[in-house]
Image 1: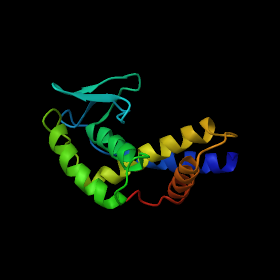
Image 2: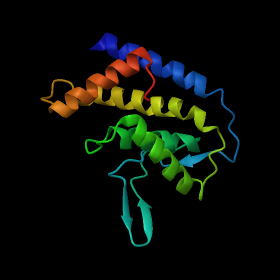
Image 3: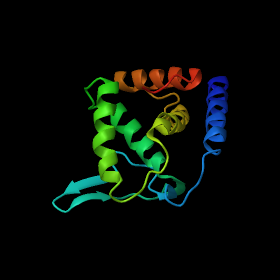
Image 4: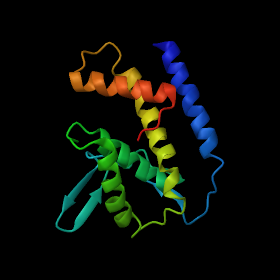
Length: 156
């Protein structure tokens, strides 16, 4: 609904305003993929290959982590409790990510970047799924995001 969408947009604006106060040091800010999820990479004998760079942008490197953590933790196939999965995933993924990029910002800020992705996806799906016949997973996923985004509830 339009009032709910406006409320989510307001939440997103507040979050972006807060994040814009963070330092943009060259060590932790630069060109990122910005859409890391399971359909935008493959794993082969030579390692990880990313593709679909149409959403690339200049942002904090930690934003890429927020995106992949949100996407991995909400994936239909994810069966572990969210907090346990995220704690395990962060440790493994950040170790690999840091081989290429310096995150620079403290990982304590990660929940804000996960929330950024959640709010953006919620707003995208609000339009994309309007009037559609959704699966049970999609209805539950959307409802949980709506509650989380509108109340500012932490992702984990």
